[in-house]
Image (cartoon, rainbow, N blue to C red; front, side, top):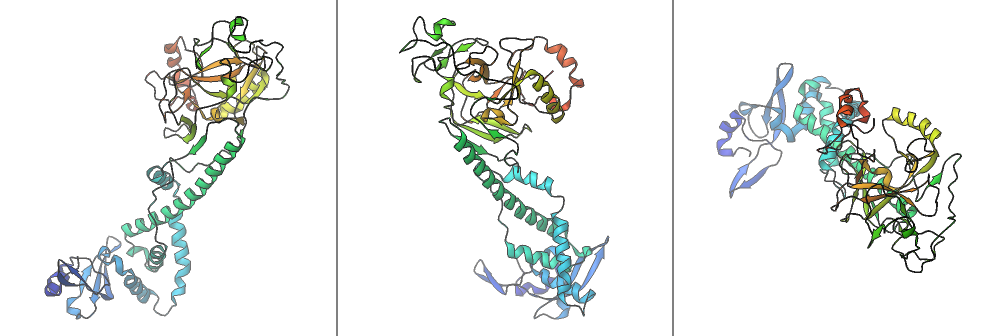
Length: 455
């Protein structure tokens, strides 16, 4: 609060109260006069920096001049700038400072990536952001004034305020551009995806945009030297399944009950195919109907990059999504795997359900895939992988169905175990943990975490 006229000498001498350029205001129904800076007369330097300015107040004699810190002159920086201009460049036009203003803006805008990342975590939301608005006029005025004040007169708080304003401005620019890119990516995926359930893209963590080298597909595509036969040589004659001679009974007990998986882990699943007489509403056609669970591709907060979460509750045994990609030979998988190891990531899934050793094919979802491309590993997952045969009955090319292994809550992240089977000798593997590459360390955070992704 500015000093009143009755206490002018006492208040001015003690330099209490913030000085403003406004003429007067009312506080508690009492007229209160505020003081206007006429000019800065002199300055004091302490420890290599300006510590105080001698202020001449308008309509007051020089006897009432006071020494004020820069914090009391926050709204009078033009006077401080004029003082240094007259002191250093009295005969020079103020256009001289344009280059200094540009240089100051550039200096304060450099090396801000760390600050942008920190502010992104604070101000980004699933729907957008809460970035504080920046008044462009105030920003430009502050830049103009500080460009005219030599470094010894810069107040660290003002410099930090200016830098934060520039960061917020840049953050808002990048966030706006990012949201547009993510929305376009979401629309492109929705246009390509044949599943009925929606897909949402959410990043409330950082400024990462859509992946550059990823193409959305709905089913397997054959890689080099791979042929996927899609004409099943046999099918059931049922009009309404299941029957005694149905696909279900030929390969064991009933797989599904009311659309939910009812067989133990590791059980091969044979759904009715295009050679069967039954329709798509057959209870033995689940995976082939596609994903019915709405999902969100989201940016994780634990450093695992993109992840996938459910936008609705999922029952235990419910089909969630099919893992699709490029079907490649084992030899090609070995070649690509060496490159993926160097990058610290892999999307290779070995089709070793029929042959544990010497299996001929793998699925690579690195470049071509669906939303399952974004599912992260967990040592305590909520999804399990089952081999499912539909139209392709080649025992070495099953489809990969991800089913809920437990009840999954809305907005819960979807995960599966990248090893797909329990490890018997956890102790011996953990003994060699320090020899593992850092990129293979597990970040799932589960109580039973094995501390590694691959071995």
